[in-house]
Amino acid sequence: MVVLGTGGTIAGTAGTATDNIGYTAAQVGVAQLLAAVPGLACVLQGHALECEQVAQIDSKDMRFDIWLALAQRVAHHLAQPQVAGVVITHGTDTLEETAYFLHAVLSADLLNAKPVVLTCAMRPASSQSPDGPQNLLDAMALVLTPGAQGVMAVCAGTVHGALEVQKTHTYRLDAFTSGDAGPLAYVEEGHVRLLRNWPLSQVDQAQEAIGKIANGEDWPRVEVIMNYAGVSGALVDALLRTTPGEPPVRGLVVAGTGNGTLHVELEAALRRAVQVGVRVVRATRCATGRVLSRPDAEFADSQGMSPVKARVALMLALMDELG
Image (cartoon, rainbow, N blue to C red; front, top):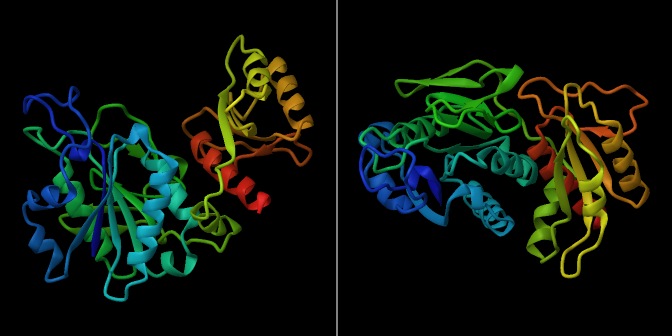
């Protein structure tokens, strides 16, 4: 098993053990984190453990170059026959985007044979009762579960698939949900209770994007905008204006109200965007449910993905089209 560290709250420290919000993320290396986890040997049951620091950041600052490096290292380790799977320590803020990105770009042959499990913490490592150690143990138990496969996330004993996982709470330890789909599994006393089938990775052209990124091609610029009372088309029009030194906007994901509904002025602005070649995808700002489109819908829908995941999907699709 391999553990890849990227930083986050799980590796954070604060000035006092009682401070769970005034901490600095990404202060403890992944090797030091693992050394502090009690009961690690019991979960590993003789399996070899290797760790590697891929990045050390607060996940609110996640960057595309880190995504690329992470995907490359995950692919490398999954291809090793002696590696049962990969655990990634990650901040909670953008965990869902990283999970979806890995699901989209990693080889289906690898993901349908071995698991990739992202885990995290809502309290820093310096807390008097940190949640990171248990989350790490649960992630390892999940990796070592017979038949486990695909990209997943585990937090507070609940397992989510990459397509569904979403952070929905700012403070509680159980900060993630899977929306209407419900959890994939629970980890209870080191044992996984599976509720649904393991996630499957489909062969998709998006998986070719990782090679294009590695060859130095730029990520297409895709922005997320929102529908709300009193919104106008001004933000869309501003984004369409080319600014010297900045790449042009290639796509827009709009988080609509309800079933993806749009203010008449915002809708008009999005039509103007389409007329100049910008791709528009309609999602919903609702935490659960999906946009149900009519056959004659003017804008494509997000296929059930949240706005931030739809943005990643659109970037990958545009990258594929550019190739």
